Amino acid sequence: MNYKFKIEQSLFNKLSLASAIGLITLILGILFTERVWPNILLAAWYITGIGFSGLMFVAIHYVSNAGWAVAIRRIPEAMFSALSIGFVLMILVVLGSHHIYEWTHLDVVEKDPILLGKQPWLNITSFALRIPIYFGIWYFIGKPILNHSRLQDETGDKIHTQKSIRWSALWLYIGGIAFVISSFDWIMSVEPHWFSTIFGFYNFAGMFNAGLAFMIILLIFLRRSGYLPILKNDHLFELARYLFGFTAFWVYIWFCQHMLIWYANIPEETGYYLIRHFGAFGVLTILNICLNWLIPFTILLFRKSKRSEKTLLIASSIVLIGHWIDLYIMIFPALLENNIPVFGLLEVGIAIGIVGVTLWVVLRSLSKWNIVPKGDTYLNESLELHT
Amino acid sequence: MDRQLVAEFRNEYDLLGSVKAIRDAGFEIVDAYTPFAVHGLDKAMGLKKSRINQISFIFALIGITVGILGQYWVSAVNWPINIGGRPWNSLPAFLPVAFEVMVLFCGLGTVFSFFAWRKIKHGKSGLQPNLRATNDRFYVVMKQGQERKSSSVMLDIVKSFHGEMVGE
Image 1: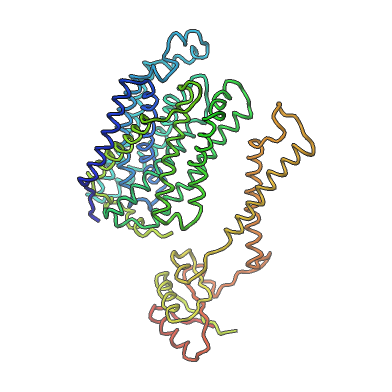
Image 2: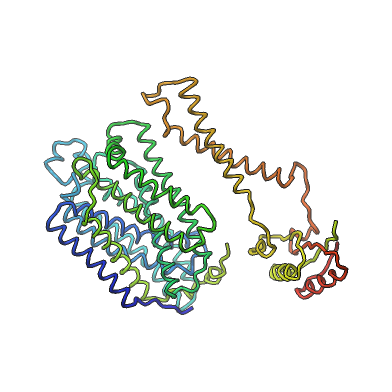
Protein backbone atom coordinates (compact mmCIF):
# COMPACT_ATOMS: atom_id res chain seq x y z
CA MET A 1 0.00 0.00 0.00
CA ASN A 2 2.98 2.32 -0.29
CA TYR A 3 2.31 4.49 -3.30
CA LYS A 4 3.59 8.01 -3.56
CA PHE A 5 2.72 10.51 -6.22
CA LYS A 6 5.48 12.41 -7.95
CA ILE A 7 4.92 15.31 -10.35
CA GLU A 8 6.79 14.41 -13.51
CA GLN A 9 8.85 17.03 -15.29
CA SER A 10 6.68 17.18 -18.42
CA LEU A 11 3.51 17.61 -16.37
CA PHE A 12 5.22 20.23 -14.21
CA ASN A 13 6.20 22.18 -17.34
CA LYS A 14 2.63 22.11 -18.66
CA LEU A 15 1.16 23.26 -15.34
CA SER A 16 3.76 26.02 -15.00
CA LEU A 17 2.97 27.19 -18.52
CA ALA A 18 -0.77 27.30 -17.77
CA SER A 19 -0.22 29.15 -14.49
CA ALA A 20 2.13 31.59 -16.21
CA ILE A 21 -0.47 32.30 -18.91
CA GLY A 22 -3.02 32.97 -16.17
CA LEU A 23 -0.65 35.24 -14.24
CA ILE A 24 0.37 37.25 -17.33
CA THR A 25 -3.29 37.68 -18.32
CA LEU A 26 -4.05 38.78 -14.78
CA ILE A 27 -1.30 41.42 -14.71
CA LEU A 28 -2.10 42.73 -18.19
CA GLY A 29 -5.78 42.81 -17.25
CA ILE A 30 -5.16 44.78 -14.06
CA LEU A 31 -3.09 47.28 -16.02
CA PHE A 32 -5.39 47.79 -18.98
CA THR A 33 -9.02 46.87 -18.28
CA GLU A 34 -11.66 47.00 -15.57
CA ARG A 35 -13.18 43.75 -16.78
CA VAL A 36 -10.46 41.77 -15.02
CA TRP A 37 -11.94 42.32 -11.55
CA PRO A 38 -15.13 40.27 -11.92
CA ASN A 39 -12.93 37.65 -13.56
CA ILE A 40 -10.72 37.54 -10.48
CA LEU A 41 -13.80 37.21 -8.28
CA LEU A 42 -15.03 34.33 -10.46
CA ALA A 43 -11.63 32.60 -10.28
CA ALA A 44 -11.47 33.09 -6.51
CA TRP A 45 -14.95 31.65 -5.95
CA TYR A 46 -14.32 28.75 -8.32
CA ILE A 47 -11.05 27.73 -6.65
CA THR A 48 -12.46 28.25 -3.14
CA GLY A 49 -15.31 25.95 -4.13
CA ILE A 50 -12.92 23.23 -5.31
CA GLY A 51 -10.98 23.44 -2.04
CA PHE A 52 -14.11 23.58 0.12
CA SER A 53 -15.83 20.66 -1.60
CA GLY A 54 -12.74 18.50 -1.07
CA LEU A 55 -12.96 18.71 2.69
CA MET A 56 -16.76 18.65 2.58
CA PHE A 57 -16.50 15.25 0.90
CA VAL A 58 -14.07 13.98 3.54
CA ALA A 59 -16.18 15.33 6.41
CA ILE A 60 -19.43 13.82 5.10
CA HIS A 61 -17.82 10.39 4.98
CA TYR A 62 -16.32 10.69 8.45
CA VAL A 63 -19.59 11.78 10.00
CA SER A 64 -21.68 9.14 8.24
CA ASN A 65 -19.09 6.51 9.20
CA ALA A 66 -18.76 5.46 5.55
CA GLY A 67 -15.95 3.13 4.65
CA TRP A 68 -16.01 2.98 0.90
CA ALA A 69 -14.26 6.27 0.20
CA VAL A 70 -11.26 5.68 2.46
CA ALA A 71 -8.98 4.40 -0.32
CA ILE A 72 -9.46 7.54 -2.40
CA ARG A 73 -9.59 9.97 0.54
CA ARG A 74 -6.17 11.52 -0.07
CA ILE A 75 -7.37 13.17 -3.28
CA PRO A 76 -10.16 15.27 -1.68
CA GLU A 77 -7.77 15.95 1.20
CA ALA A 78 -5.26 17.34 -1.28
CA MET A 79 -7.97 19.47 -2.89
CA PHE A 80 -8.28 21.31 0.45
CA SER A 81 -4.98 23.10 -0.33
CA ALA A 82 -6.69 24.97 -3.21
CA LEU A 83 -8.22 27.23 -0.52
CA SER A 84 -4.84 28.99 -0.21
CA ILE A 85 -5.10 30.22 -3.82
CA GLY A 86 -8.69 31.28 -3.16
CA PHE A 87 -7.47 33.34 -0.20
CA VAL A 88 -4.82 35.14 -2.27
CA LEU A 89 -7.33 35.90 -5.03
CA MET A 90 -9.93 37.18 -2.54
CA ILE A 91 -7.36 39.65 -1.17
CA LEU A 92 -6.92 40.86 -4.76
CA VAL A 93 -10.70 41.24 -4.97
CA VAL A 94 -10.63 43.53 -1.92
CA LEU A 95 -8.10 45.73 -3.71
CA GLY A 96 -10.38 45.95 -6.75
CA SER A 97 -13.69 45.98 -4.89
CA HIS A 98 -14.47 49.45 -6.19
CA HIS A 99 -14.87 47.98 -9.69
CA ILE A 100 -17.10 45.09 -8.64
CA TYR A 101 -19.32 46.13 -5.73
CA GLU A 102 -21.78 48.98 -6.03
CA TRP A 103 -21.94 49.38 -2.25
CA THR A 104 -18.33 50.58 -2.13
CA HIS A 105 -19.35 53.81 -3.86
CA LEU A 106 -20.17 55.98 -0.85
CA ASP A 107 -21.91 58.69 -2.90
CA VAL A 108 -24.34 56.12 -4.31
CA VAL A 109 -24.97 54.58 -0.90
CA GLU A 110 -25.88 57.91 0.70
CA LYS A 111 -28.72 58.50 -1.73
CA ASP A 112 -30.07 54.98 -1.53
CA PRO A 113 -32.08 54.06 1.60
CA ILE A 114 -31.84 50.30 0.90
CA LEU A 115 -28.05 50.36 0.60
CA LEU A 116 -27.84 52.69 3.59
CA GLY A 117 -29.72 50.09 5.64
CA LYS A 118 -27.29 47.39 4.58
CA GLN A 119 -24.23 49.51 5.24
CA PRO A 120 -23.37 48.09 8.69
CA TRP A 121 -22.69 44.74 7.02
CA LEU A 122 -21.70 45.80 3.52
CA ASN A 123 -18.83 48.21 3.98
CA ILE A 124 -15.30 47.75 2.81
CA THR A 125 -13.71 47.46 6.28
CA SER A 126 -15.92 44.68 7.54
CA PHE A 127 -15.87 43.02 4.11
CA ALA A 128 -12.07 42.87 4.22
CA LEU A 129 -12.11 41.69 7.84
CA ARG A 130 -14.56 38.86 7.16
CA ILE A 131 -12.37 37.28 4.47
CA PRO A 132 -9.65 36.06 6.87
CA ILE A 133 -12.40 34.96 9.27
CA TYR A 134 -14.01 32.64 6.69
CA PHE A 135 -10.69 31.22 5.54
CA GLY A 136 -9.52 30.97 9.16
CA ILE A 137 -12.62 28.92 10.08
CA TRP A 138 -12.06 26.59 7.15
CA TYR A 139 -8.32 26.26 7.77
CA PHE A 140 -8.35 25.73 11.52
CA ILE A 141 -11.22 23.23 11.47
CA GLY A 142 -10.02 21.47 8.34
CA LYS A 143 -6.35 21.15 9.21
CA PRO A 144 -6.83 18.85 12.27
CA ILE A 145 -8.80 16.40 10.09
CA LEU A 146 -5.89 16.24 7.65
CA ASN A 147 -3.32 15.95 10.45
CA HIS A 148 -5.15 13.07 12.12
CA SER A 149 -5.43 11.27 8.80
CA ARG A 150 -1.67 11.60 8.22
CA LEU A 151 -0.73 10.61 11.77
CA GLN A 152 -2.84 7.51 11.33
CA ASP A 153 -0.58 6.41 8.43
CA GLU A 154 2.14 5.71 10.98
CA THR A 155 0.21 4.58 14.02
CA GLY A 156 -2.88 2.90 12.58
CA ASP A 157 -4.71 3.89 15.74
CA LYS A 158 -8.49 4.19 15.59
CA ILE A 159 -8.45 7.17 17.97
CA HIS A 160 -7.57 9.35 14.96
CA THR A 161 -10.73 8.28 13.17
CA GLN A 162 -12.81 9.09 16.24
CA LYS A 163 -11.23 12.53 16.63
CA SER A 164 -11.65 13.24 12.91
CA ILE A 165 -15.36 12.46 13.21
CA ARG A 166 -15.72 15.20 15.85
CA TRP A 167 -13.79 17.74 13.81
CA SER A 168 -15.82 16.78 10.73
CA ALA A 169 -19.11 17.40 12.55
CA LEU A 170 -17.80 20.84 13.50
CA TRP A 171 -16.76 21.43 9.89
CA LEU A 172 -20.20 20.54 8.58
CA TYR A 173 -21.88 23.00 10.96
CA ILE A 174 -19.52 25.95 11.14
CA GLY A 175 -17.67 25.52 7.85
CA GLY A 176 -20.94 25.03 6.01
CA ILE A 177 -22.53 28.12 7.56
CA ALA A 178 -19.38 30.10 6.75
CA PHE A 179 -19.68 28.97 3.13
CA VAL A 180 -23.30 30.10 2.89
CA ILE A 181 -22.56 33.49 4.44
CA SER A 182 -19.47 33.97 2.30
CA SER A 183 -21.53 33.33 -0.82
CA PHE A 184 -23.95 36.09 0.30
CA ASP A 185 -20.99 38.31 1.00
CA TRP A 186 -18.90 37.86 -2.11
CA ILE A 187 -21.31 36.90 -4.89
CA MET A 188 -24.81 38.02 -3.92
CA SER A 189 -23.63 41.51 -2.93
CA VAL A 190 -22.53 42.16 -6.52
CA GLU A 191 -26.17 43.16 -6.86
CA PRO A 192 -26.77 44.63 -3.40
CA HIS A 193 -30.48 45.36 -3.90
CA TRP A 194 -31.33 41.78 -4.66
CA PHE A 195 -31.54 38.99 -2.12
CA SER A 196 -32.37 35.31 -2.02
CA THR A 197 -32.13 33.16 1.07
CA ILE A 198 -31.56 29.97 -0.91
CA PHE A 199 -28.56 31.49 -2.69
CA GLY A 200 -26.06 29.80 -0.38
CA PHE A 201 -27.52 26.35 -1.05
CA TYR A 202 -27.57 27.06 -4.75
CA ASN A 203 -23.87 27.86 -4.61
CA PHE A 204 -23.22 24.81 -2.48
CA ALA A 205 -24.86 22.54 -5.05
CA GLY A 206 -22.88 23.98 -7.94
CA MET A 207 -19.66 23.95 -5.94
CA PHE A 208 -20.09 20.32 -4.90
CA ASN A 209 -20.85 19.32 -8.49
CA ALA A 210 -17.64 20.94 -9.68
CA GLY A 211 -15.65 19.39 -6.82
CA LEU A 212 -16.92 15.90 -7.61
CA ALA A 213 -16.19 16.33 -11.32
CA PHE A 214 -12.68 17.57 -10.52
CA MET A 215 -12.15 14.57 -8.22
CA ILE A 216 -13.31 12.07 -10.85
CA ILE A 217 -11.01 13.54 -13.52
CA LEU A 218 -8.07 13.55 -11.11
CA LEU A 219 -8.68 9.94 -10.05
CA ILE A 220 -8.88 8.72 -13.65
CA PHE A 221 -5.70 10.62 -14.47
CA LEU A 222 -3.91 9.10 -11.46
CA ARG A 223 -4.99 5.58 -12.38
CA ARG A 224 -3.93 6.01 -16.01
CA SER A 225 -0.48 7.19 -14.97
CA GLY A 226 -0.18 4.20 -12.65
CA TYR A 227 -0.17 5.87 -9.25
CA LEU A 228 -3.47 4.51 -8.03
CA PRO A 229 -3.77 0.82 -9.00
CA ILE A 230 -6.16 0.20 -6.09
CA LEU A 231 -8.86 2.39 -7.68
CA LYS A 232 -11.64 0.11 -8.86
CA ASN A 233 -14.46 0.92 -11.24
CA ASP A 234 -16.73 0.52 -8.21
CA HIS A 235 -15.18 3.61 -6.61
CA LEU A 236 -15.76 5.59 -9.79
CA PHE A 237 -19.30 4.23 -9.90
CA GLU A 238 -20.02 5.55 -6.40
CA LEU A 239 -18.58 8.96 -7.26
CA ALA A 240 -20.56 9.05 -10.50
CA ARG A 241 -23.73 8.33 -8.54
CA TYR A 242 -22.85 11.29 -6.31
CA LEU A 243 -22.36 13.47 -9.37
CA PHE A 244 -25.61 12.21 -10.89
CA GLY A 245 -27.50 13.00 -7.69
CA PHE A 246 -25.97 16.42 -7.24
CA THR A 247 -26.68 17.53 -10.81
CA ALA A 248 -30.33 16.80 -10.04
CA PHE A 249 -29.96 18.63 -6.71
CA TRP A 250 -28.46 21.62 -8.51
CA VAL A 251 -31.37 21.98 -10.93
CA TYR A 252 -33.80 21.44 -8.05
CA ILE A 253 -32.35 24.37 -6.14
CA TRP A 254 -32.07 26.45 -9.33
CA PHE A 255 -35.74 25.88 -9.99
CA CYS A 256 -36.70 26.60 -6.36
CA GLN A 257 -35.02 29.98 -6.49
CA HIS A 258 -36.42 30.80 -9.90
CA MET A 259 -39.99 29.66 -9.28
CA LEU A 260 -40.44 31.44 -5.93
CA ILE A 261 -39.21 34.73 -7.37
CA TRP A 262 -41.32 34.28 -10.51
CA TYR A 263 -44.39 33.47 -8.44
CA ALA A 264 -44.01 36.24 -5.87
CA ASN A 265 -43.44 38.77 -8.67
CA ILE A 266 -41.93 41.48 -6.45
CA PRO A 267 -40.05 44.08 -8.52
CA GLU A 268 -36.92 44.17 -6.36
CA GLU A 269 -36.47 40.41 -6.80
CA THR A 270 -37.58 39.88 -10.39
CA GLY A 271 -35.07 42.43 -11.66
CA TYR A 272 -32.37 39.85 -11.10
CA TYR A 273 -33.96 37.39 -13.48
CA LEU A 274 -35.11 40.04 -15.94
CA ILE A 275 -31.56 40.72 -17.10
CA ARG A 276 -30.65 37.03 -17.02
CA HIS A 277 -33.57 35.43 -18.83
CA PHE A 278 -33.92 37.74 -21.82
CA GLY A 279 -31.54 38.69 -24.56
CA ALA A 280 -28.12 37.13 -24.89
CA PHE A 281 -28.00 36.07 -21.25
CA GLY A 282 -31.20 34.08 -21.81
CA VAL A 283 -29.28 31.87 -24.22
CA LEU A 284 -26.54 31.47 -21.61
CA THR A 285 -29.12 30.53 -18.97
CA ILE A 286 -30.45 27.74 -21.18
CA LEU A 287 -26.87 26.62 -21.87
CA ASN A 288 -26.24 26.70 -18.12
CA ILE A 289 -29.12 24.32 -17.39
CA CYS A 290 -28.08 21.99 -20.22
CA LEU A 291 -24.42 21.82 -19.14
CA ASN A 292 -25.04 21.54 -15.41
CA TRP A 293 -28.00 19.23 -15.44
CA LEU A 294 -29.54 17.98 -18.68
CA ILE A 295 -26.45 16.61 -20.45
CA PRO A 296 -24.55 15.11 -17.48
CA PHE A 297 -27.81 13.79 -16.01
CA THR A 298 -28.72 12.02 -19.26
CA ILE A 299 -25.20 10.65 -19.72
CA LEU A 300 -24.95 9.36 -16.16
CA LEU A 301 -28.45 7.85 -16.16
CA PHE A 302 -27.12 4.55 -17.45
CA ARG A 303 -25.22 2.08 -15.32
CA LYS A 304 -22.63 1.41 -18.01
CA SER A 305 -21.69 5.06 -18.44
CA LYS A 306 -21.16 5.41 -14.67
CA ARG A 307 -18.49 2.68 -14.88
CA SER A 308 -16.58 3.73 -17.97
CA GLU A 309 -13.66 6.17 -17.85
CA LYS A 310 -14.49 7.76 -21.19
CA THR A 311 -18.08 8.81 -20.47
CA LEU A 312 -17.13 9.90 -16.96
CA LEU A 313 -14.40 12.17 -18.35
CA ILE A 314 -16.88 13.70 -20.80
CA ALA A 315 -19.59 14.24 -18.16
CA SER A 316 -17.15 15.66 -15.61
CA SER A 317 -15.61 18.10 -18.10
CA ILE A 318 -19.08 19.28 -19.07
CA VAL A 319 -19.94 19.89 -15.42
CA LEU A 320 -16.72 21.84 -14.83
CA ILE A 321 -17.38 24.09 -17.85
CA GLY A 322 -21.02 24.40 -16.78
CA HIS A 323 -19.99 25.55 -13.31
CA TRP A 324 -17.85 28.29 -14.88
CA ILE A 325 -20.83 29.50 -16.91
CA ASP A 326 -23.05 29.29 -13.83
CA LEU A 327 -20.71 31.64 -11.95
CA TYR A 328 -20.42 33.88 -15.01
CA ILE A 329 -24.20 34.32 -15.03
CA MET A 330 -24.20 35.08 -11.30
CA ILE A 331 -21.46 37.73 -11.40
CA PHE A 332 -21.27 39.44 -14.76
CA PRO A 333 -24.73 40.72 -15.85
CA ALA A 334 -24.82 43.53 -13.30
CA LEU A 335 -21.41 44.81 -14.35
CA LEU A 336 -21.74 44.75 -18.12
CA GLU A 337 -23.26 47.50 -20.17
CA ASN A 338 -26.15 46.80 -22.54
CA ASN A 339 -26.60 43.33 -21.01
CA ILE A 340 -24.37 41.64 -23.59
CA PRO A 341 -22.06 38.85 -22.41
CA VAL A 342 -18.38 39.50 -23.02
CA PHE A 343 -16.04 36.65 -23.67
CA GLY A 344 -12.52 37.23 -24.88
CA LEU A 345 -8.87 36.36 -24.44
CA LEU A 346 -9.01 37.69 -20.89
CA GLU A 347 -11.61 35.12 -19.78
CA VAL A 348 -9.79 32.29 -21.60
CA GLY A 349 -6.41 33.25 -20.15
CA ILE A 350 -7.69 33.41 -16.60
CA ALA A 351 -9.62 30.13 -17.01
CA ILE A 352 -6.39 28.43 -18.17
CA GLY A 353 -4.69 29.96 -15.18
CA ILE A 354 -7.39 28.54 -12.84
CA VAL A 355 -6.84 25.04 -14.22
CA GLY A 356 -3.05 25.28 -14.08
CA VAL A 357 -2.69 26.74 -10.63
CA THR A 358 -5.40 24.56 -9.01
CA LEU A 359 -3.93 21.35 -10.42
CA TRP A 360 -0.44 22.45 -9.45
CA VAL A 361 -1.34 23.19 -5.84
CA VAL A 362 -3.46 20.06 -5.45
CA LEU A 363 -0.91 17.70 -7.01
CA ARG A 364 1.92 19.24 -5.00
CA SER A 365 -0.03 18.65 -1.80
CA LEU A 366 -0.82 15.11 -2.97
CA SER A 367 2.85 14.31 -3.54
CA LYS A 368 3.76 15.04 0.07
CA TRP A 369 1.99 12.06 1.59
CA ASN A 370 1.27 8.44 0.85
CA ILE A 371 -1.49 8.36 -1.75
CA VAL A 372 -3.46 5.67 0.15
CA PRO A 373 -4.31 6.25 3.84
CA LYS A 374 -2.72 2.94 4.79
CA GLY A 375 -3.35 3.21 8.52
CA ASP A 376 -7.10 3.76 8.34
CA THR A 377 -9.16 1.10 10.05
CA TYR A 378 -11.72 1.12 7.23
CA LEU A 379 -9.17 0.65 4.43
CA ASN A 380 -9.95 -3.01 3.80
CA GLU A 381 -13.66 -2.30 3.55
CA SER A 382 -12.92 0.32 0.94
CA LEU A 383 -10.60 -1.93 -1.07
CA GLU A 384 -13.25 -4.66 -1.09
CA LEU A 385 -15.94 -2.28 -2.33
CA HIS A 386 -18.50 -4.03 -4.46
CA THR A 387 -21.43 -2.41 -6.15
CA MET B 1 -40.62 -31.30 -13.72
CA ASP B 2 -36.99 -32.01 -13.04
CA ARG B 3 -35.81 -33.06 -9.66
CA GLN B 4 -34.49 -30.24 -7.53
CA LEU B 5 -31.83 -30.67 -4.86
CA VAL B 6 -31.27 -28.45 -1.84
CA ALA B 7 -27.83 -27.92 -0.33
CA GLU B 8 -27.06 -26.24 2.95
CA PHE B 9 -23.97 -24.15 3.75
CA ARG B 10 -22.63 -22.57 6.89
CA ASN B 11 -21.26 -19.29 5.55
CA GLU B 12 -21.55 -17.03 2.53
CA TYR B 13 -18.05 -17.72 1.17
CA ASP B 14 -18.83 -21.44 0.79
CA LEU B 15 -22.14 -20.51 -0.79
CA LEU B 16 -20.53 -18.20 -3.34
CA GLY B 17 -17.80 -20.71 -4.19
CA SER B 18 -20.18 -23.61 -4.60
CA VAL B 19 -22.60 -21.60 -6.73
CA LYS B 20 -19.74 -20.78 -9.09
CA ALA B 21 -18.49 -24.39 -9.14
CA ILE B 22 -21.96 -25.85 -9.76
CA ARG B 23 -22.55 -23.49 -12.66
CA ASP B 24 -19.10 -24.26 -14.06
CA ALA B 25 -19.96 -27.96 -13.94
CA GLY B 26 -22.92 -27.20 -16.21
CA PHE B 27 -25.86 -27.36 -13.80
CA GLU B 28 -28.60 -24.83 -13.33
CA ILE B 29 -29.22 -22.91 -10.11
CA VAL B 30 -32.90 -22.43 -9.37
CA ASP B 31 -32.53 -20.07 -6.45
CA ALA B 32 -30.49 -19.23 -3.37
CA TYR B 33 -31.80 -18.40 0.10
CA THR B 34 -29.68 -16.36 2.48
CA PRO B 35 -30.39 -14.55 5.75
CA PHE B 36 -28.76 -11.35 4.41
CA ALA B 37 -27.74 -9.83 1.09
CA VAL B 38 -24.60 -11.52 -0.24
CA HIS B 39 -22.60 -9.24 -2.54
CA GLY B 40 -21.69 -10.79 -5.86
CA LEU B 41 -24.27 -13.57 -5.61
CA ASP B 42 -26.36 -12.16 -8.47
CA LYS B 43 -23.33 -12.29 -10.75
CA ALA B 44 -22.31 -15.76 -9.57
CA MET B 45 -25.83 -17.10 -10.17
CA GLY B 46 -25.86 -15.54 -13.64
CA LEU B 47 -29.06 -13.59 -13.01
CA LYS B 48 -30.10 -11.30 -15.83
CA LYS B 49 -30.33 -7.57 -15.21
CA SER B 50 -33.73 -6.64 -13.83
CA ARG B 51 -35.96 -4.85 -16.31
CA ILE B 52 -38.11 -3.24 -13.61
CA ASN B 53 -36.33 0.12 -14.11
CA GLN B 54 -37.63 0.32 -17.69
CA ILE B 55 -41.15 -0.14 -16.36
CA SER B 56 -40.48 2.65 -13.83
CA PHE B 57 -39.29 4.92 -16.62
CA ILE B 58 -42.42 4.34 -18.69
CA PHE B 59 -44.66 5.01 -15.69
CA ALA B 60 -42.69 8.19 -14.93
CA LEU B 61 -43.19 9.43 -18.49
CA ILE B 62 -46.92 8.73 -18.24
CA GLY B 63 -46.99 10.52 -14.86
CA ILE B 64 -45.32 13.72 -16.03
CA THR B 65 -47.50 13.86 -19.15
CA VAL B 66 -50.65 13.44 -17.09
CA GLY B 67 -49.39 16.03 -14.58
CA ILE B 68 -48.69 18.72 -17.15
CA LEU B 69 -51.62 18.07 -19.49
CA GLY B 70 -54.05 17.71 -16.58
CA GLN B 71 -53.11 21.06 -15.09
CA TYR B 72 -53.12 22.67 -18.50
CA TRP B 73 -56.64 21.41 -19.12
CA VAL B 74 -57.87 22.47 -15.69
CA SER B 75 -56.38 25.94 -15.52
CA ALA B 76 -56.18 27.00 -19.17
CA VAL B 77 -58.93 25.15 -21.06
CA ASN B 78 -61.80 24.11 -18.83
CA TRP B 79 -61.91 26.82 -16.16
CA PRO B 80 -59.39 29.62 -16.73
CA ILE B 81 -58.80 31.69 -13.59
CA ASN B 82 -56.78 34.86 -13.53
CA ILE B 83 -54.21 34.49 -10.74
CA GLY B 84 -52.20 37.66 -10.25
CA GLY B 85 -52.25 38.43 -13.95
CA ARG B 86 -50.15 35.44 -14.89
CA PRO B 87 -50.80 33.64 -18.16
CA TRP B 88 -53.25 30.75 -17.90
CA ASN B 89 -50.69 28.38 -19.28
CA SER B 90 -47.88 28.93 -16.74
CA LEU B 91 -45.37 26.14 -16.96
CA PRO B 92 -43.21 27.05 -13.91
CA ALA B 93 -46.24 26.81 -11.65
CA PHE B 94 -47.21 23.42 -13.10
CA LEU B 95 -43.80 21.82 -12.63
CA PRO B 96 -43.87 21.03 -8.88
CA VAL B 97 -47.25 19.31 -9.12
CA ALA B 98 -46.25 17.53 -12.34
CA PHE B 99 -43.11 16.32 -10.58
CA GLU B 100 -45.10 14.91 -7.67
CA VAL B 101 -47.59 13.21 -10.00
CA MET B 102 -44.61 11.68 -11.79
CA VAL B 103 -43.20 10.32 -8.52
CA LEU B 104 -46.62 8.95 -7.55
CA PHE B 105 -47.18 7.18 -10.88
CA CYS B 106 -43.62 5.89 -10.95
CA GLY B 107 -43.66 4.54 -7.40
CA LEU B 108 -47.10 2.92 -7.42
CA GLY B 109 -46.70 1.68 -10.99
CA THR B 110 -43.38 0.03 -10.20
CA VAL B 111 -44.62 -1.66 -7.04
CA PHE B 112 -47.85 -2.98 -8.55
CA SER B 113 -46.24 -4.16 -11.77
CA PHE B 114 -43.64 -5.95 -9.66
CA PHE B 115 -46.46 -7.65 -7.72
CA ALA B 116 -48.17 -8.64 -10.94
CA TRP B 117 -44.97 -9.83 -12.55
CA ARG B 118 -43.90 -12.00 -9.60
CA LYS B 119 -47.52 -13.04 -8.85
CA ILE B 120 -47.36 -11.73 -5.29
CA LYS B 121 -50.77 -11.32 -3.71
CA HIS B 122 -52.22 -10.67 -0.31
CA GLY B 123 -51.67 -13.56 2.09
CA LYS B 124 -49.10 -15.35 -0.01
CA SER B 125 -46.47 -16.98 2.20
CA GLY B 126 -42.81 -16.97 1.34
CA LEU B 127 -41.15 -20.08 -0.02
CA GLN B 128 -38.29 -21.21 2.18
CA PRO B 129 -36.44 -24.50 1.99
CA ASN B 130 -35.88 -24.27 5.71
CA LEU B 131 -36.68 -21.58 8.26
CA ARG B 132 -33.00 -21.37 9.17
CA ALA B 133 -32.52 -19.56 5.86
CA THR B 134 -33.85 -16.53 7.73
CA ASN B 135 -31.40 -17.00 10.58
CA ASP B 136 -27.93 -18.51 10.11
CA ARG B 137 -27.86 -20.97 7.20
CA PHE B 138 -27.45 -20.58 3.46
CA TYR B 139 -29.36 -22.69 0.93
CA VAL B 140 -28.95 -23.32 -2.76
CA VAL B 141 -31.64 -25.01 -4.85
CA MET B 142 -30.25 -26.76 -7.90
CA LYS B 143 -31.91 -28.40 -10.85
CA GLN B 144 -30.81 -31.95 -11.45
CA GLY B 145 -30.23 -32.81 -15.08
CA GLN B 146 -31.44 -35.90 -16.98
CA GLU B 147 -28.26 -37.86 -16.38
CA ARG B 148 -28.31 -40.23 -13.47
CA LYS B 149 -24.83 -39.63 -12.14
CA SER B 150 -25.31 -35.85 -11.99
CA SER B 151 -26.49 -36.00 -8.40
CA SER B 152 -23.23 -37.60 -7.27
CA VAL B 153 -21.24 -34.90 -9.10
CA MET B 154 -23.29 -32.28 -7.34
CA LEU B 155 -22.75 -33.98 -4.03
CA ASP B 156 -19.00 -33.90 -4.56
CA ILE B 157 -19.01 -30.20 -5.28
CA VAL B 158 -21.22 -29.42 -2.29
CA LYS B 159 -19.04 -31.59 -0.02
CA SER B 160 -15.90 -29.81 -1.17
CA PHE B 161 -17.41 -26.56 0.14
CA HIS B 162 -18.30 -28.07 3.55
CA GLY B 163 -21.99 -28.19 2.71
CA GLU B 164 -24.46 -31.02 2.82
CA MET B 165 -27.43 -32.13 0.78
CA VAL B 166 -30.55 -31.72 2.84
CA GLY B 167 -33.42 -32.60 0.58
CA GLU B 168 -35.07 -32.61 -2.76
